[in-house]
Length: 221
Image (tube, rainbow, N blue to C red):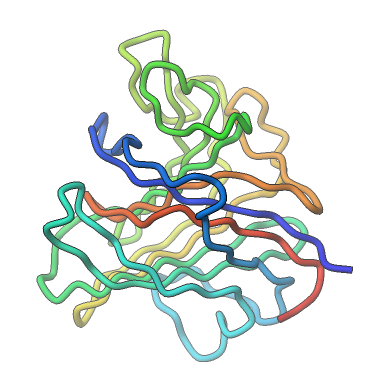
């Protein structure tokens, strides 16, 4: 029996605090699928994929598109879990060597199949990953004051992610782990268990992918 957590990605446009908002979201039936398998290989979160550490992960090649569709960058997403943490790696091929193109992973924590609406989505959960390491940032929307994304700790929650990012030789690599259930209700953190489905956005700088359904399996790959 396989244990599944499902993640989906949306297309984004207007920006607030560096994160773009969905305007051309695909219908549910058009979302592709990705599985987070049970971890076998330990991961060192150092902003690089080394050896076999992600060989046991679910994997999908993706295209990160600009809001105008004028530019695109190829990349890959890896996902797995260990019953306690959800692990995600994002790789973007960037020959132009953009500086400080952070990655974001945004979760539809309130399970309303909507995400990143700056006027209504106060209960979604996000992680920001700098491309030169740095401090992990758990953020969420503060609808009480100007509808801005703010740090969880500034809104009464806790910072529940571990991240690392690095840019080298035309490749941007971002790694993170986040608790499947941190108990941080004040931070609107995800609460995921066997068979759950959740909508998620993966974004790199001003570019993002399309919808994807990610499921969590109790079995190794």
